[in-house]
Length: 406
Length: 231
Image (cartoon, rainbow over all chains, first blue to last red; front, side, top):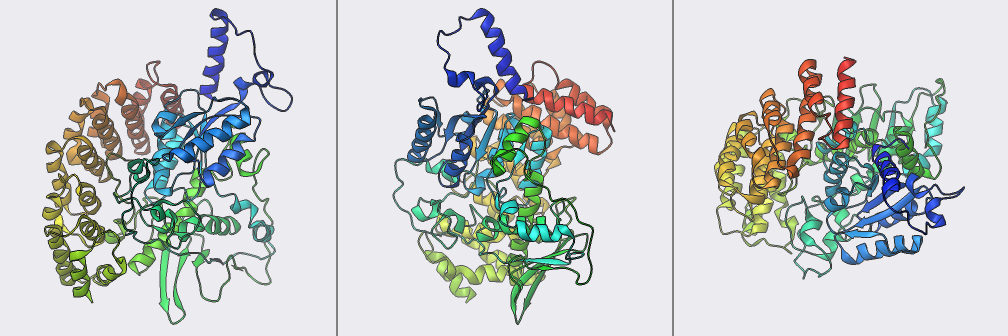
């Protein structure tokens, strides 16, 4: 490992060894073996938001011999305790520390990397703060809640030379068939691809319910507008129809960003526009229905909910072929989690490098704004502005509740 | 329909059907390009903010003013900036309102605010990249409330003007705000490099590369120096 914090840990051990009595018993687990590096060479990790997807992420990292999982953070006491229980059971000890406030976890010098799987409205704040604290980050998708957050997250990652991976495993794993077809060149130059996904999130106005004692409600809301507790407002289930935080605008873009991160991720990968953003969103409202088309600088079009088009239906150029290109893939072993860990060790960019993930979810956000304003929009990705459109530019971000800022 | 929706706002509260208010959000979209229609709508919305409507109703109104707001609603929103319950939603409507009056309202609120509300106002000035607030924000870098000092540092890092960079470089932050100041200075240095001010950027990076800085800041500064050297 080349990470500075790990070096410091090793340097500490070296220095401490000269002046501090070595414990009589060093467990074989700490020394490592052929399958598991010594404790000092493992990547020390913690998790923020460890229910639902976060528990799955925790399980994936816990199962790796090259990771030492030491801390969990969640604003729900029961979820937090269960996550600690899983880590302690795995290591047969009680070492995993619990935190209600992610800032305390990020302040720990001994932690190299964190995974973040909170509701989406927290992602940018936590990822940026983690970078500032020198941590690498695996962040669940959708990585951003607003367009403004994306470049700020990328800037923080680059500023501190952090490995920051987005979290959609489906981009590579679910859509491989269509990706291989496009990259093989057999479809000729690609003209367009369609994505069917939704719905958009809605304003939540659920009635107040008594706040359970085991949730820190103010921290759950965090940067979102204040609202009273309601179970359906904060439930972490994967629905987007009203019974979960994924349904509501203050926390999520709805299916458009939640599944959109997967589908648009697959689409942008298949037609190879992962490294750019659209220059225009055209809003269509005709007898066939409402849909948008997103136009890229190289002429490729991604449509959303285009009538009569299937999900990930590609329009190539019949009768033409194109030179094949090698399809990028994960590094290391163990899918997207292994890719992240390998990159933490090598300092390479992961498959879902935050910049690519931001470009993907920008497609969702741009489409949402066009649907909200019900008109077509020009987009300048260099300035991250809708040129000459003051009204649309007001929708670039969602003002954070004090004291939170990015 | 629009009249009925405004009527519904009078009794709107948590648990009420938000769809009853849809004509208002539809009117916001439909009045795009219709200056008089938009102003009439904005005035009706602003009037709710000074009525006895619930916090929830006022929350809804501020959401609509994000798009529908102009300088006309600024005085009403400014009056809510010191309101503990409504300050956030007032900023929600003001933060990206391009009217100069919106920036002035936030600057005016800054010296009167304290605690979390002050941090919110600082944050909004940063998002607006409000160059006129640099002097006031610079003074807050030494605030006894470390959270205020950190917020001011991040806001100056957002603004990134030469004056903002100067205020940050002259700051003597408390230990709790040191990392935030360093981060903001790194942001300013990136902006300097992007604008061809290599010598100025390298000076910032050099000053952040000492052993008194956390190792992630030293790493960032070293990378910045390398980036500057290659330009």
